[in-house]
Structures are given as structure tokens and as C-alpha cells.
Image: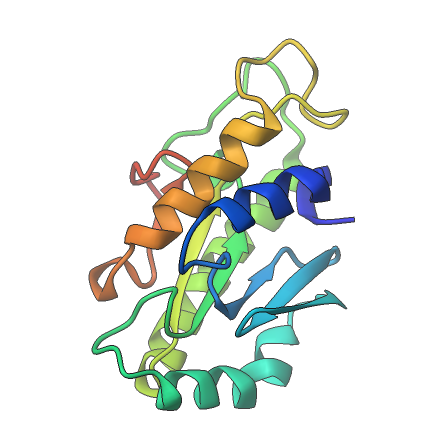
Amino acid sequence: KLPLHVDTKVLRSTINKQKGLVMCSKGLISSPGFAGWLLVGRRRHLTDTGWDSPKAFLPLLKTAALRSPKEGLSCSKAAIVNISSDFGSIEKMAGWHLSQVISYRCSKTALNMLTRCQSLEYRQFGVLCLSIHPGWVKTAMGTLLVPTTVKESTTGIVKVLSTVTEGDTGSFLDWEGNTVPW
């Protein structure tokens, strides 16, 4: 399974519809403790991710960045995308009245700090790093009463990742490209 119970058929369909972009075509999509996709070129590798996964894949990411003819940082060069949640925003405190889930919030806040640290550490190697909030999605985890479908979220994430630039490294964005406050 992918992070946040993303329907892999929908994700593959979304990826395949995007010409020239294979969800961070040379990057790691990570949500610690869950399975994730390492995408190198057009080959997708399912992997068990954890806090040290980016270090394990750093040689591949460095190679992708070095071989890319593109200038600056981008998802089409080399990237680490951490799947976060606006529940990890200290400023926003999204959904507190609905569900406190303190351990989940703390884990996403820690993931956002990891993203900032990765962005500072891996920038020198040409690797873009960011956190992305997929939205409150209609899943078993997110309830079926919310407005965002898995397809809308994954399509939005792919669109956002296709437009991020060097200026976005270390940022926290949502599936629509909006900045989420720390």
C-alpha cells in the first residue's frame, strides 16, 4: 500500500497521464513507517520507508541530480517528497475541534522538521525536498464525508510537483499548491 491508503490504480493512472513527469521522476515519496515509491527514471520501486530511507537512497538521488541537464532544483531532477498533513501545522491546528489525535499531529510536525533538515542537507547535492499535505481525502482513514476524492488529491499532487522550483525546497505545500503554515 502507498501512504495514506492511496489507490495505486488511480495513482498510476494519474502518473501515466502526465507527460514527462513520473511523480518526482527521480525522487523518493516518503511517509515514515509506510511503504512508498522510489522512482528512478521511469522505473517504480516499492520500498519500505523509514526515517533513514532518504540516506539509503541518497546515492541514487545524487546520481539523478548529476545526470540531469536541468538547472536548479525540481522534481524532474531529484526530489524527496514527504507526505505530511495540515494536522502537523503548529500555527493552523487544523481539525482540533474534530479530532485531537496528538500522537499523529506530533509525528507529522516531526516529519515537517525532517523535511526542513533534509532541504538544508541535500540542497548541495541538487535534491529538492518538501512536505505535501494531500488534503482531507475520502478514505477509510479520512472518512467518506469529506469533499476531496483520491483522484482529485493525487492529480493535484502531481500537478503541484510538476511546478515546484528551487524556491520551494524546504516548504510545506498542499495538494492545490498553497503554502501550509508551519
